[in-house]
Image (tube, rainbow, N blue to C red; front, side, top):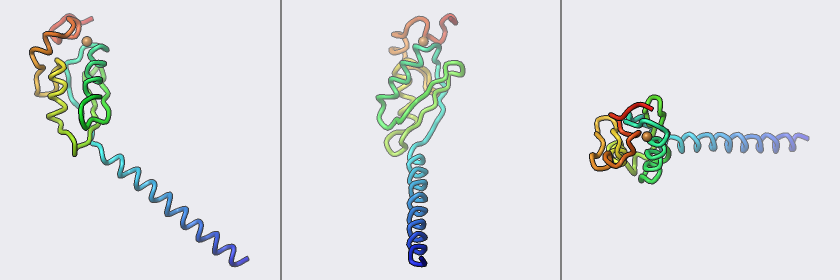
Length: 122
Ligand SMILES: [Cu+2]
């Protein structure tokens, strides 16, 4: 009986250590990505789609979520692979402002009239 108990305790200790390690590994994984919020000049759902698509193909970007109401794009990225400057440049090249980086004029000219920042609100 005593032997079974000590075996059980040993198994429990192993289980606790394994659970603890898993939690630690998950926290470490989450830390791998940095989150930034970029103010864009997006006007509608079409802009949201365009910007999110561009960022999906951008190197080092894990995910992006643009809120059309606030025009703020929340980007999760790997800081070892890209920088906020590069991400803003990618948005600019899609024709939209990204914080202090203004939209690339050529890309901006190609946008649908409804997506232009000086266009009429719809
Ligand atoms: Cu639009």
